[in-house]
Length: 341
Image 1 (cartoon, rainbow, N blue to C red):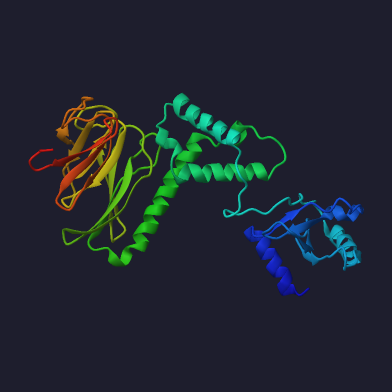
Image 2 (cartoon, rainbow, N blue to C red):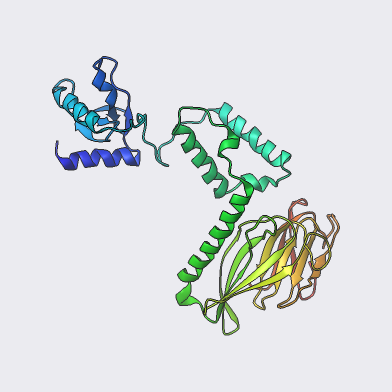
């Protein structure tokens, strides 16, 4: 077998197309414990083995190949070992997964319900790619160890998460500016988030302005939210960053918000926020510290111009404002200029 053949087998193992499995039950020699057989994508045994210590791939066919080569490799590999490497039982990738039993799915569902109910968290906390990445990494950790792990031993402290979230958010903003650098005009305005648990933020929306006109909009997604403070950042081509505190603290005053869930910026740099717990939509004009209520306010109701936990908002090309009225199971449309719905 050539080196290129060995490399091909290794790549297929690493990609998950092939996987390793235990030796044959008829292989009784002690040195066989250092080798695993290899299965192809149809789970057929192929005439190769992999050393669990050095990860070398060797040709072996019980009907045609002498085991002398394997034994010699074992002796050479053993003499170089200082720490025994755990045995590989399988190679996994995102494209190759086992079926999940319904009882496990039900158990995870129950734990997600507890996570939301006991911690008074929104059900959206268990929705999206962030949680999926977390669960996938926890599964990988579980597969890499043969002992039980206490949840409290692996969950990081909240302050550690806060620092990392803030750092990651700043890095993502810088990457975004670099990506759009050639298309940025006078300034890039990013409305959204400070990423600290104590201050929070709500959403991250990007609008590009050139000579006072909006020429593009992108990336409108919830990054992190909690209670109270709403902050806007303006990024200039010079690298300067201006922070603007728009609303401060939890409450229902015109300079406050309570569990804000959606944000939108129009061509005049006016900020609209779905103020969920106050059942209203707030509007902040440019450079103001106190908002106005263009529609509804502080009442849970199913009447027109009233909301029950508004979640998100959007404009169409005719400047109509659409608001997701979550608990009323409807979407309301408003012409802000005339306040009609």
